[in-house]
Image (cartoon, rainbow over all chains, first blue to last red; front, side, top):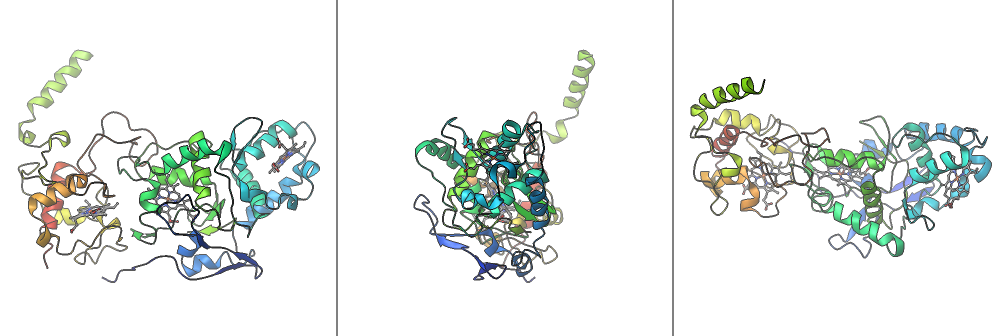
Length: 267
Length: 156
């Protein structure tokens, strides 16, 4: 039969709303030993899927982001505060997401965006923590990340971050499950190749939370990690686990240089 | 209760002789990656092997292309095309490759289809939960033989 022999990434360029240029290809950061060039997952998708990201009116992820704008301005919890009452306009977070995740200097804990949002909800607002992968949480994470759209990811991997980064790297190269496949087996050794109907990308997270057409919602970084590890017939780690925080830092650092692309659209 | 259970176990054991020739996943003998002896002592069925290439735990075409299988859409290219595999490999080689490809190709991404030990965080199939008890191999001994019989038809 005729086989859809896909090769590597395509040559398309991503400009959102005709104005925000997205860096979808960059020289790999120095810490990457086996890859010269890094690519956004957008470069591996079909033209139809790619098109959904060109204009925010066509981007199905923006509905959840719009709901998050409401939530951002809504008072909730015992302290009578909203995000806006402390932080003002959401664009005050411009640039912030590009350096996430990072270690909190006071606690020494590696914080991903979900941790920050829930800390503000529980400690500042007196509101309930949101579920990790729920629409409330992922909409808010997307809204904050959106304020950095276009900016190159630039997470720190040294200093206090170093031990977490090492842990994440070890997880990335571990062959889990009965299929004995590591993240690297699929996303480093085989990006550009087809695994059954799937065109393998580098598994970058610069576009997260990502609207996944298959699940018809914004999905979290940890939900994606879970799915990929589950598919190796392995016992996964939990969303919000320290293992996934460390892996998030590590995978994010493999995208240092690519633009924040949130909310990306994927198949 | 215990005694009834034991009696049932004894009965099952007594009914075993038919399968006595099946080599357990932990007892397979590899020589340079190849396995000489049939895992079941029974001939493989190439028609069944052909189906296993596409479905369930086999799903070989997730990674391999086979021109002989045009009815199966979306063949992957993580591994080499299997066209002409029977010209390159003996039956024993193919049995070894399908049972545990890591014996023939150390570090390969190809899963070990007839191996049950030595995994990191093995799961309960595709649930994401931890495996309970002993793992079943991805393919049964007879399924391995069936796949090998099918691969032996791939000449150029």
